[in-house]
Amino acid sequence: MIEDWVALFDAWVRANADWAAPVTFVIAFLESFPIVSILVPSTALLLGIGALIGTNMISPIPVLLGCIAGGIAGDAAGYWLARWVGPYAVRKRLPRSLRRPYAWSVVVFRRWGWWAVFIGRFLGPMRAVTPLAAGVVGMKNASFQSANILSAILWAPLMLMPGSIGGWLARQLGEDPDPMAIGATIGAAVLLCFAWLRLKPRLQAMVKTRLEARPGS
Image 1 (tube, rainbow, N blue to C red):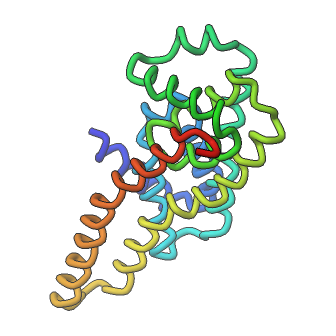
Image 2 (image 1 turned 30 degrees about the vertical axis):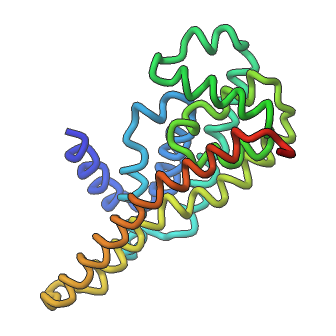
């Protein structure tokens, strides 16, 4: 179901390349806006857009800028929403699956502040509640927005890069590729994927342990 929807979306972007940047902005906004990010397959859509960049079907710079702007706007909107509705309303309306990450995020924010916002964008469960936690604990707008902007500048290319590399490899193989080249490409992709799956939990555990440690300890 989701795969079919993503395929239809990719086909639409191919036929409407001039809309790629605005569409990327919307997707990045939804990926960064609290709670909504767990309901929309934004990551898969951004990977698909990255693949179109790799095949030279859409221009990379406007799309990258749209992704950065969407990430910034999504987090900023979540932050101001939390400031507006208050902590009680935020806790009451959170889905049950996000209450534990939210509580942990609040504790992290009280200890680490700016770095919690910056790193939170790159941690899956925490990204869905990072702006809410920042707004609830009353983090200053200037501090939040500086971490929001800097993290989005790094986050956007990381989201688009895997798809772009895949699209570039597909373009290099051509329409009638050598079977040996196909095998080597698939093998390299599998090894990279396996290495990332092994490394990702360790990196997240390391970051979480560091964040939970008391400052100065």
